[in-house]
Length: 190
Image (cartoon, rainbow, N blue to C red; front, top):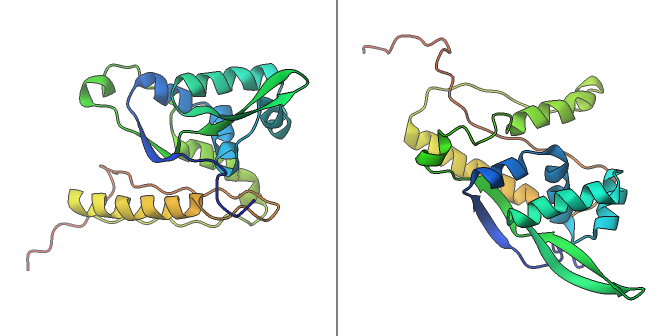
């Protein structure tokens, strides 16, 4: 491999604009599959071996991702008179972009939360003293929040494009969220 990650062409970003796409991304096995495909294209057999799940289960989840437009066949090879498909992601980064008419209709899964996934995944690292993280709170306006999010997104994109090496996969979680009931000092009158 020439260091290019992944080993096929794909878009930089894809807006997930339907509840079905968000639901597809909300499954932990499917997000794991997309993570594996960020490294290189893979067959259902290879993915099945990597995740330790039956090929039929992996094939189902790959089909869901394909139907949602997040995965596609990027190449095939002939194996004993059968064409084996290799799947890749359709974009380096997926982001949720539901319009306001869809967002409030109850179709978006309520359990779609990257921080919940990060909390579950990081528990063993915390127990072993290997979890590094920060949490900070600041009163900022909407413009500052959007600018900070843009910078965090660039950092995530940088993390996504790091050459794959080493023996351990590391997680990286970032976020900005409002806390309406967080204590605040009264505004300074001077």
